[in-house]
Amino acid sequence: MATVFDVAEWFLHRKSFTHKQLQKLCYYAQAWHYVLLKEKLFDEEIQAWIHGPVCPALYARYASYGWESIKKMRGKSPIFSDKTLSVLWAVYNTYSKLTGAQLEALTHSELPWRKARGNLKPYEPCENKISCESMMTYYGQKFKEAQGD
Image 1 (cartoon, helix red, strand yellow):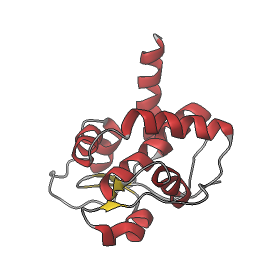
Image 2 (image 1 turned 180 degrees about the vertical axis):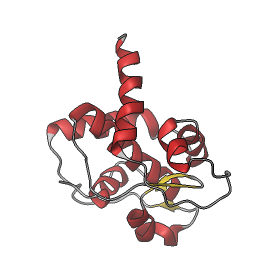
Image 3 (image 1 turned 90 degrees about the vertical axis):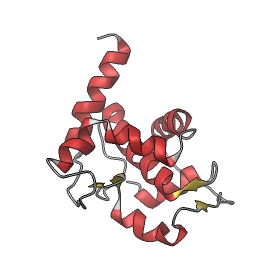
């Protein structure tokens, strides 16, 4: 199984991203991988923070960048199976054009983040986990709707 760091590096081998963008790309990669391939992409937990889904382990690694972009990586990109690559490319092609603020707003409009936060106010800190089951339910329904089911 990959780690969230492998996934982040795969995205960073494509282009430079802000920390907020990278967090949301990894979140969507986990969600869509779970829906489409029926397995987690990585084991690290994702939590429902104020600015959207955040993997605390990934946050710790890139926190020093603040609001600045993380430079595009050079060299060898992490290796994934063809099936996982198809999900990563789909996530990249769908979400990588959005700004951090747009990705934050999108995740705030979606049930997995809202459900994990419960009745907390928008400005209240939260470390509640966003479960893969919640992702499966929400994004699985979105996928069915897109397929015309």
